[in-house]
Every structure is written in structure tokens, then in C-alpha cells.
Image (cartoon, rainbow, N blue to C red; front, side, top):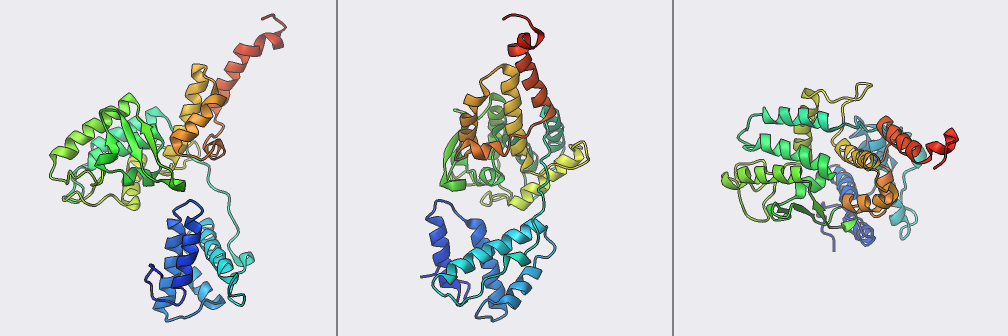
Length: 325
């Protein structure tokens, strides 16, 4: 029985497809949103079947998005159609050759502690609003947790009061990507920021129920920030603090996570730590299945190259210069 409730003949097969996908170990909420978008498009046009014309019309509804986003949405619908074709061989399947060509992804903008300090100063100057009475504290804590704990934006938004343990300095991340839950220990500075925010959060008029959002944006305290709302606030901090790459690009919110990983790698080189043995620890901390996923975030930056070169010289420089150990 379908639970999508859109009201099209494709609801039932779409629900079976999502159940099959989720049995593989992921939430597939993004896939569900794309399917629901298509099904609602069909319902609004009283369409009973998907064909090339309807698929093209649906694709035009998000023509203003980037080529990679448009291609990904179309690809997900094609995967659904291929699944359906297994039991209904004559059904329409979009031609992938007609999709937008994939474009190279923008390199992340990696920033450091000085940039974060400027963002925090800007956050302090923000004024509370009726819809977000704790706006300065929300933005400040968001910057700290994204940068020092490497959280995904969605993980931060889903945190509840029960997930934050300021005494132990630990956050509980519940069923994030790949249905993985984990505990994230915080640095001493991040723990102090959490305690300072909770002092404001718990004495305000906002809900203090354990399951209420840690970051809430209404006077009742029952509604968490949306991804768009938080991103808008963080982009304000980034631009006001003038955090940019050397070629003038502004960081994305996800670049906090990239910066966290790169800064961890740089610290290990500077401290003389065993980088290879620490990579699995970083993968576990970031909620990755393996270090293969973590490697995506470890960009080779000039500072890392210099630290690695200095370390190599200290260990093997005598061999190059002809000296003895």
C-alpha cells in the first residue's frame, strides 16, 4: 500500500521503488523529493502515464538550476523508470544522452581560524528577530560546530536538546547518512560555546522539551531552522566577513566540512602525528563508511604541501644532502 498519497497511478510503484532503495541502507529522502515532484507535476496535469513530452515539460520546470543538479534529477527519474521497466517492459525510459552534460564541480574554498574569528564577530553584531529571538547565538554556534566538528548541515539542523551533552562535551548524531549514528566529542572551545548557547536557549521562552530543536527559529521553539534559512544566515556572515578564495569565490556552507578535514590534516603534519593511522579516526568522526569518502575532503593545499615537505626533509634530508643519520 502506498504512503506517498500524491494521487497518481504511479504512486504504488514509486513507493515500492523507495522501499527497495531504503533496504540497501540509506534514507533516500532526496530521491523521494524528486519522485514526489514528478508525481505532483503529473497530478496537476491529470496525466496518467509518463512519456517523453511530460518528462520534458517537468524538466523545464527547473531549467534555472545548474546543469549538474538538472542532470541528477533526470538521472534519478531514469533509474526509477528502469526499475519499473523490469516488470512493465513497454514503459517509457528517458534517454540519458539527452540530459545536460556533467560540469566540473567547483573546488571548495578552504578557510582557517582567522576567517572563522571574523565570522563570529559578525554573528555577534546580528540582531534578534521575532521569528529568531536567538539569532546571534544560533549563527555563532552554527559556525563553531560546522568548523570544529565537521558536521553536515542536515546533522546540525536535526540536533535536539537531548542530543547535546554539555557536561561530557559530546553531540549525538542520530541516523545520518547511511543510517549511521555516532557520538561526536567537541573541542574545549566548542564545548564552551555550546554551554554559552544553552544558557540562552534554556532561559528563554522557547520550548525546553528534550525533543525540541537545538537551533529553533520561532518564539515557541518547536520548529527547527530550515536548510535554506540557516544557509542564508551563514552566507551573510561569510560575505560580511569577506571570506573569499584567492580567485574571489565565496565559500559554500558545505565548505565548512571541507575546511574541517583539511585543517585536521594540517595539524597532524605540524604535530608530527602518524597521518595514515589517523585517517580512519577522521573517517569515523565525520560519519564516513571508509577513508575513501574522507579522501574526497582532503584537498592538497600549499600549507599541507609545505608541512609535508618539512616533515620529509627532517626525516630523510640527510640522505639527499649526503650526511649520515
